[in-house]
Length: 233
Image 1 (cartoon, rainbow, N blue to C red):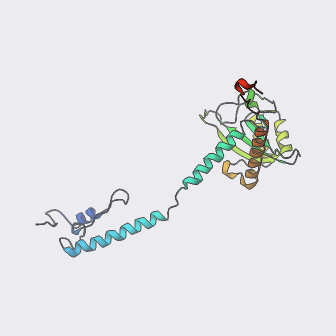
Image 2 (cartoon, rainbow, N blue to C red):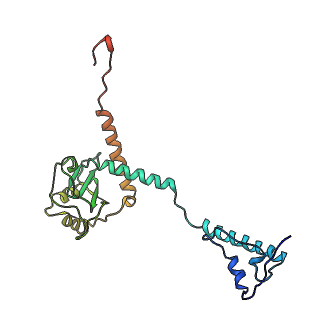
Image 3 (cartoon, rainbow, N blue to C red):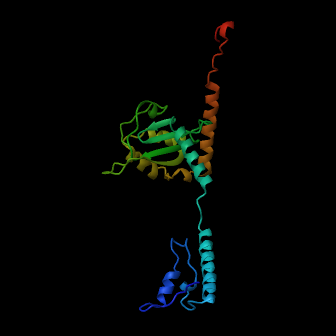
């Protein structure tokens, strides 16, 4: 017992081609004599359709293998790196308006490197701890385009010297004036986290190392409970 296709009244060879089309963006393929318009209702038509679909599957697989895939490990590293930078900027060496700056902790020379972060959009800077160790507080709103109320801040960075950072902090005016001064006078180019390059990565590593060392040195030794044998140290 068995069955085979035939061209019904009102049908044509186009119907065989329609049955042969793959679905699911190249995930499901169809073979069989009913998909072969040249040799329908025959065993060799079924066999040839199998070879045809095998070639189509191979073609789709090869095209997908050439498409670059996102490296999950690189994505994870990027998230950790961004989290580290966010943590370091919780205690900037200098802060004013929407600008925060980390200095090279191993040098006080005016030509030493500094990392500047500018927050674009979002809410204004908070006072208190968020004002940075410099103690400077300016009443200027963070940089944003007029008429827009962004829900999240965009963090942009650039490298400059300690002297330039100090000069920028002493400017009068708001963040937009400082940003214009930064780009026009210092020829600075604001980039994303990944655009800092080797110099920026080295500076970040230096800040992380020094702060970790200082934290370990300044961490007090917890008191030891001697119980009934004596008082706590």
